[in-house]
Image (cartoon, rainbow, N blue to C red):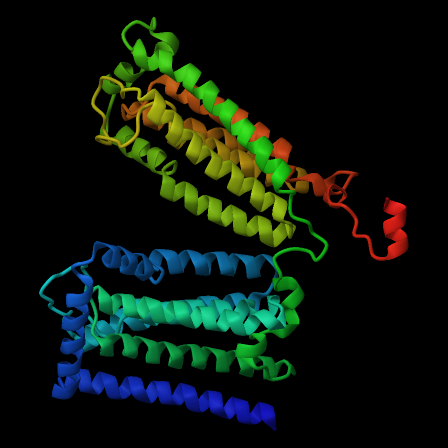
Amino acid sequence: MRTQRSALWRMAGFGGAALLFSLLIIAVRVRWVPLESADRGIAEALNEAVAPSDFLVTLMGGISRLGSFGVLAWLVVIGTTLVLVRKQYKLAGFLVATTVGGLILDPTLKLAVGRLRPVVEQPVAHGGGNSFPSGHSLNSLICYTALLLVFLPALRPRWRRMAVIVVGAVVALIGFSRLALGVHFLSDVIGGWSLGIAWIGLCAAAFELLRAHEGLRVTEPLDEGLEPEAADDLRPTEPHDHRPGTAHALALGAVAWVFTFGALVAAGLPLARHEDGNGNILWDSTVPHWFAAHRSDVLGHVSIVGSEVGNTHAILAIGLVIGAVSLAAIRRWRPVVFLLTVMFGELSLFLASAAIVDRARPDVENMDGPMPTSSFPSGHVAATILIWATAAVLVMPRTRAWWRWAFLALAVAMPVWVAVSRMYRGMHHPTDIAGSMLLSALWLSAVYWLVKPNCDLTERPCEEDAPEPVSDLEDAKAAR
C-alpha cells in the first residue's frame, strides 16, 4: 500500500510539472504581461549585481559549463560505457533514451516558441538560438538525475540522500547561473526544470513498467535507484580491492618526475640555444624544409586530422573512454590510477619543460599558426604515445583474443601519424619528437613500476601490499 501511494505521489508530481510547463509555454507565447514584467525585472536586477564583478562572472560561467553539452555528453557516455560493460543493458537504454529525449525537446521547443534572449544593459555572456526553455536547465536536470537514478544502488544507504541533495543543488546552481549571466529569463529556467521533471518521470515510469512485465517489484527510485538488484554490478570495484598506497608512491613519483624533467631540460636547452649550430642533428633543418617543399591539399587534410587526434581534447576524450572501460571491466582502482598518473604527469612535464627550454618552431610556415608553447618537446606526440601505450599495457596481459593486437598496432601507428603530421605542418623538429619519446619512456616506466596496474594478474596479488587487519587482542599480540 505504501509503495502504491508513493507511486501515485510521483505520478502527481510529474503531472504537475507537465501542467506547469504547459501553462508557462502558453504564457510565453501570448506574452502575458505580468510574466514578462517579472522576467525582465529579475534579469535587469541580476545583471546589475553580477556584471560589475569579474569574479562573479567567472564563477557563474564555470557553473554554467557544468550544464553544457560537452560536459553532459561525456558524463552520459562514461556512465553508459560503465553499465554496458557490466551488461546492464536496460540501464544503458534508460540513459540513452532520457538524454536523446532532452536533445530532441530542447531545440524543437525553442523553434516552436521563438522567444528572444534577454537584452541587458551590461552583457557578460552570449547564448545562441532562442530562449525558451533553457537548454542548460532542461538537459542538466535530465542527465544528472538519470545518472543518479542509475548509480544510486551502488551507494551505501546513508549516502543516497546526500547524493540526491548534491544533484539537486548542482541543477539549481546551473539554472541560476543562466539567469545571472543574462542569457535566460526566470520562466525559461523554470520551464526547463518542469519539462525535465516531466520527461525523466515519464522515462522512469516506463522503466517501472518494464520491471513489472519481468515480474520484479516496484522500487522507490530516489531511495534505492531504478535497479536495486544491480547494486553489486554498479559498484566501481570489487569489495576486496585496495587502492595503491599513497605516501610511498607519491614520494617516489615526485622523484621520478624531477629526474624526467631534468632529462628533458638537459636534452632541450642545447637545441634551443644553438639552433643554427647544432650540426643539423637528426636532420632538424632538413626535414621541416623538405616537408614544406612537398605540401599538397590532400596531404594537408591528412596531416590536420593526424594533428587533431593528438590534441588535448582528443586525448582527453580517449582517456575518459579508456578509464571508464578499465574501471568497468577490471573492477580495480590501479588501472585508473595508472592512467590518470601517466596523463597528468605527461601534461605537467610537457608544460614545465617547454617553458624552460623555450625552443623556437622550425623556420618554415607554421600551418597551425602561433602556439602558446614552445617546440620542445612535442606535447601532441608525447600524449599520443602515452595514451595508446597505456591502453596496450592494460589490455595485452588480460586477454588472449586476437583483437588485443589492435591496441599494440595503435600504440605504434598513432604516434607515428601524429609525429609526421606535426613535422609536415611545420610545428616540430625531429629532435622535438625524440624529446617526446624520451619523456614517454621515462615517465611510463616509472609510473608502471610505482602503480603496478596489472599486479592482480601476478602470483602475489595487490592486496599483499596492504597490511592485514588485526581483528582482536590475541592477533594484535601475535603481530607484535
